[in-house]
Length: 371
Image (cartoon, rainbow, N blue to C red; front, side):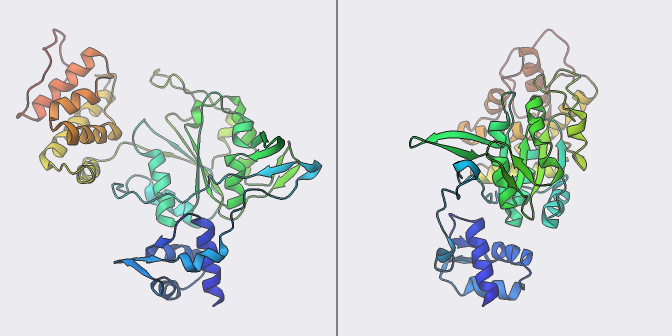
């Protein structure tokens, strides 16, 4: 009985707006609490069945749900408000685990504070990987998007005027610490030296909120992941002009760095097929031609033959466009129109060589193709 109460309480805390659960989700949480799989399964399946494999646990979770919008008075009479920004991501059916996914999953499952830096080119699934690892493990997740303007007020928190009273609004970093959640600092190399306010956070130790005098101790399970297009040393080739040089002392606080490449042909093919299924427009041959096309471009890019590359994200955009326009070349053209005219034309021309069943809709350039 005690275990089921403990499990219901934890589920209510982690999933504040969710009532319907699959047994595997409940089991994942139960394992973290040291509860046997058989006990968590009985707890789940004894509740009303919504459909095959899905159960409604609302009656069990309701007693533990409290809509807390204010915390007690802080020192100096300052009230602190908390918004519900911490959540467990939904598992995306189109996600295909690859690259460092298993490593990220192992780190998160361990519950150890292990700051991890994930670097790689744009559009190769860095952020999505961490999010989906949290989804599969039922872990709470907070994503912070970094910009040049991001400062301590945005990250740690600041004062706000609510109903005529000055209150302290806790930032996403503090919320993640208190919840024992996974904090994802996205595009960390886009920030200024103002992100140095996270130095203490990166040590996994209690942090003093200077504006209120409150000492915040990170709850068990709290960890930090950061994603970036560079390794914090700036972009030498100018591809990521907004990327800044991150202070060495800050970078040293990351235990490891994962270098995320683009997926293999086989993995990328699976990703495109899942997206085609999602959008109701399955064309296996088109998926095969797209991954062959993108692979050729990437190899040419690595050899300095072209200045642009086709990311996995862009291939997914092409698949989505194809489901709307039902025209391969139009879908490709629309999705690569952000490139300069010569690059766009060369990419389109290359695709016609990969897929003999289509013709390029643009005029042939006088310049020699790099392919």
